[in-house]
Image (cartoon, rainbow, N blue to C red; front, side, top):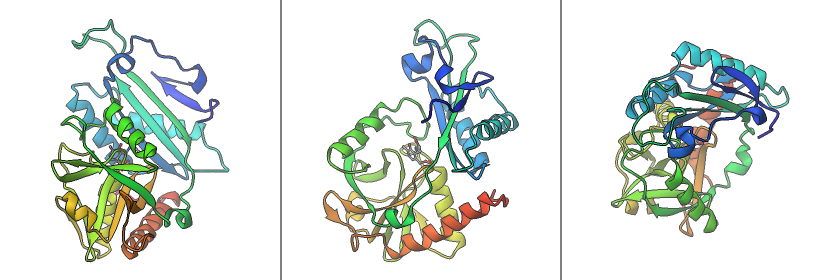
Length: 295
Ligand code: PDD
């Protein structure tokens, strides 16, 4: 993250290193806030409406009024991208966060306190498909999180501890299991392929409704691939031909080693090669400014 990048804070655009919030901000004190991570390819925000809808759902879930309208958000983020446009690398990853604002420390909601609204952006490295197809290593861990995982909260202590445990075990991601059922990754959604059928757990309060997840389901079905939103047991996970993890920043990663067990042939599988080609074509269209609202 280059400190010289420009961020947005409560209506102002300023250098990131000059942006300050009070220590009494409830985001700092309680983790009382929600966030979004939105890629921008060639200056075009990726699935912006879907991200703003999820942001609004998260805000409603924590009883916090959305401080901006969708049009205002679009303006703020477009200006932020323009101010950080580095022509060498036209892709950016935008992070936005809203907290319940600054107030004396009290668990009870403060009255009439303005929300703290922050957004920043940094360059997003282009996906190196050749490198990615070698796949990543993951481990399974018990899903220790709360019951409202559908809210994109900034209170991410469980997620970072799970990620840390994966890293300590030389893995890039933790695949989470709750009562024998796979939910998602610590920072991603999960797909498996079995006998040519793509599967992902159905949306519920047990997982984040990933924007990339939805796009993968849409693109697969639109391109004649069988894709089911169906529960996946831990047993079924280990008998999968392919395992993928999806997120806005990492796109679709093949898992080729799980708990030291090789998945498939130990490299990205045939369906992954199909879906990543379709996904990159979608991105190219977006970068070229094509309307890609719906897949
Ligand atoms: N995380 N599940 C969790 C717990 C996540 O944190 C994320 C993304 C996803 C994927 O959602 P999406 O496809 O909308 O990015 C699923 C972001 C990238 C982050 O926290 O940095």
